[in-house]
Every structure is written in structure tokens, then in C-alpha cells.
Length: 225
Image (cartoon, rainbow, N blue to C red; front, top):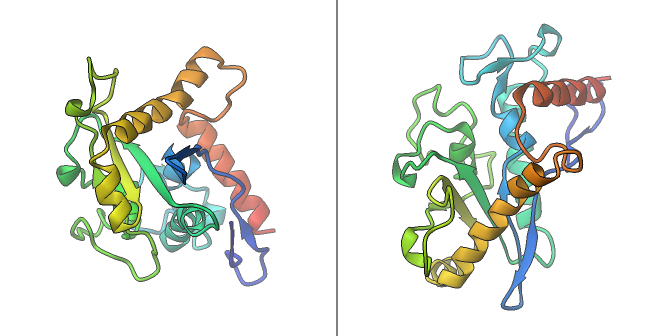
């Protein structure tokens, strides 16, 4: 995806990739469930001049250039670009929540953003579900419960909140479809399983804060030349 330059004399800001899956189910084309990779990493950094909302600070030379508004636009734009693409019937996002109920999963910047909010919502004390005018996302959170499994639920099955970017009709239909929900769980586990079994061939499938910070810093350096 491409965004306006971070500064007036800069280059078009290009976000190069996102980790994502795609599959076909009953003749429909779906993307996801992606586990936000560098998108989640963007939600963990902030300029020194902004209110505290993240765990990592960008180098001072980027202060005022890569703001929380930019981060919100990059993440929301990346996800919305897939949703709006020709031939895509829907997208599902998956975020680790350590077993928390989606109704109380309120402190995650990326969770708020997937529902249409701003990346600083938690820091500003805005209510969960607040919609920011510049964010086109309107994800609906849900959990895959143990009732959809015919046997013992998979390991960590309860550790994720999913966000549906489906039409209302598809959302209501597919969330009653146990086969579809089990398929989401299987696909969600494929990336981490592949990483664990082939660590030398799957760079970037699991989040690494230090490596991610280097990635973001280099991305910003090239975008502000």
C-alpha cells in the first residue's frame, strides 16, 4: 500500500508487505486469519513527543515525522486494502489475547484500531469501540469456543480474539458454521507451526521487538529521504 509522504518533501510512503493467509471456502475467497506482524509492531512504537501509549520509542530524528496518526493510517490502510480488493469476499484478523473475553479485551492498541479506533485510544482513555473518522475498519470481535470441536480443542485455541471483516449476512452465517471456525483455527496455527519446524526458512513469522524496531526505523529512514 502507498500513503502520502510523511513530510512535505519526502517520498510516497510505501508499506511493503504483511503476513497473511488466503483460502477458499464454499466458493468464497477469504484472507486471514492473519496475526498482525509488523502492523502490531507499529502499534508498539511512538515518537518521544507523544503521550505514552507504546513500549518503544523511535529515534529522535523521527520525532514529529511518524506520528500516531501515521501509524493508524498505515495499519488501517493495509488491512482495508485487502478487504476492498477485487475478488475478496472477506477477511478475518486474529490477535493473541491470553484467554481474555473479547468484551473485556480493551487495552490492546491494535484491537481498538481493528474496530475503527485510533492507536492512542487507550492512552487517551477513550471508550473501547470509539470510531476515528480516518479509520475505515469496522471489525467485529469474536472467540472460537470449545463447542465447535468434535474432540479435544487444539492447544491455545482459546488464546485468540478474531475480528470479522465480513458482510453482516456472511458474518452471521459463518459464525454458526463449526467447520469454518475449525478451519480458521487450523490456518491460524500454520504460521507459528511452520516457524517452529523450519526456523531457517520462515523469517518474520513470529514477532521480535528488537528486529521489528530495526525494520520500522529503516522503513522510516527510506521514506523520509
